[in-house]
Structure formats: structure tokens, C-alpha cells
Image (tube, rainbow, N blue to C red; front, side, top):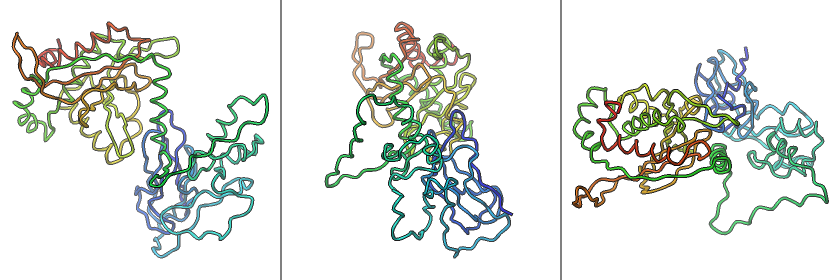
Length: 417
């Protein structure tokens, strides 16, 4: 009995994905819940497990194919033994014969190809199945679309929608697409991943839509460092190996300041301001595919140990590619720490639809005037970028001062002052 492998729910506001790679090939034995295929979404890579034990009998959409939620990916023959020596099969042809092209085959093994492709097919720009159907219905010329954004330049449904949304030319025929620059010796052209394209689009969106401004301050880390050094061993022993880091202090300091300045924790929705009576803290983490911002939910209700444990767990799963989509959504305020990479000063970019983000930086000993004397203190520059449409300069500066006060005197955080 054949069991269908379908695209699962991809989380909030995510309806399509690209097949990154098949982890099994046709004929391979699979165990129930064993990962079969990796899907790359705008936010994270998702593994689709085998619905039952058996063997992978068919791959419907190969690597590089674009699929939507609920789409058929392949078939598993329940209870059948896998044949290791069975040759790899190609993906099932596209549902629309008018497209005249098959989805790319699985990359897990060699696939026989015809010596010469049909004359009416241009593999480099051939449309995906969903795109082919839309092209047929709309009467758009494939030549007019040019190169697509899919793998190997294939045209996706998004390319067709983007083309159809453009205003019709009034005068002469549109100019030919600008040809790609010829590569020089030592250069290599690599297609941007879906995640990298999304990061680029969201950062540009933040710059275009928000009235973004950054305010700076500096914080003396002496008190936090002394407290941490004194109690880190006892903290780790009491909380089962969870280490006491600096991030929990900054999360607690930000939570206290957000309660005092609720606009920093709010967002703009049309012509309204949405205030949040909770704090879902986004923590920027560098992963193998780029920067992602997992969310520590209800950080305002957590203690130091729970914050440190949650951040540590999220960071590990970001690096292992095991983060869940719902863990990347719903943040109300974010913290990014460029200091772990050696950054002394930077201006962080907002994470829409959030209205503010705090940037931490490298701790560096500097001479400071303390009580009329020069002392060497471990100092850190802080930067807060904010949307000036919703947060006034006075609020932003005062917020950052409250964070500074909480870090320089951590007793305030414990007493909620």
C-alpha cells in the first residue's frame, strides 16, 4: 500500500517552500518518522519524515522544485523492504503536459538523461509545473519572462506573479533583460539561498518602511562581571549545568525597561499602534545559512536560569538546523550581540514588525573618570535602533539609560527597580 508524503504546515505566513534535497533515494528502506526530504522556506529548513516504515517508491518533485502546503512530494510503500541496488528513478512528470518539462531529479544518485533535450524545451529557463499552468492561463510568453529565480534559472510561480503585477508598457517593447556580467578569472557565481534572499528583502523593507534612528550609550560591565564570577559555579551546579552568561542580565534589563516604556515593545499596524502586554524576546543567532532570530516567549515571566537555558537550547538547535518555524515568529523586541564576533560599535537594523532592537558589543577595557580619578573599566557600547514613527527620541534615550542602569547595578533587576 502506497502512503503519500505531503508538504506539512510551514508555519505562520509561510505557504511555499523549495525542495533543498532528498535524503533518501527511490528503493531505499525507510523507518517511520525518519527524515526523507529537506524543505527550505523563507525562514528555516524543515525536514519531512516518513509517514510509515517501508521503502521510498517514488519521488514526485525533485530537488529545486517549488511546492506549496499539502502538495504531494513522493510515495512510501508501507512495509516493503528497500532495495539498495535498485537504480534511482526520476521524478514524476509535471501534472500539466503543456509545460513540457519534468521537475529536477533527486540529487542523491546519478540519473540517466537524454543525449539531446527536446527542441521546444529550454532547461535553463523552463517553468516549474505551477508556473507553467499560470503561463498557459494568462497567455504570457516564456521568452518575455526571461530567466527565473528558481534553481538553474527556472521560472517559478512567483516570477509569473511578479511579471503580471508590473504595469503594462505604454510605448515600445520593453528592453531586453540586462545580461549577467561576465565573470573574471577566480570569480564564481552562486545562487542566493531562499533564506538569504528573505534576509535581504526584510532588511531592505525595514530601511524603506521605518523612520529608523539609532541612539548610543556605554555601560560599565564591572558589577555584572563581578557578580557572575562570584556565583557562576554555584549557579551552574544548582541549575543542572546551565551556565550564567551576560545575555540573561541584558534580557532582564530590557524587560524592566520595556515595562516602563511600552511604546518600545509595540508595533505599528496600519494607522494603529498595537501595544503588547508581554515580552517575547528575539535573540539574534548566527546559523550555517545566515542570521535568524528565535524568540524567547514570555521572557518577562522567566528567571535568570530559565532565560539562559532557553537561549542555550535555541542556539544549539539553530546551529543544528532543528529550529521550529513557530520559534521564529511573534517577537516583540530583539537583542543582537555583535560583540561575540569582535564588533566594537554598529547600528543594528530593525526586525519588522518590531519597533526597536538593542545591539550589544565587545567588552573592552578603557580608561574612565571615576570619582575624579582615572580607572580602567570593562566597557561596552550599546546601540538601540528604533522606529521614530512610534518611539520619540526621549523615550529611546531613556529606555537605553534604564538598560544601562540595570546592568551597572544588577541589584535593581533583582529588586525590580
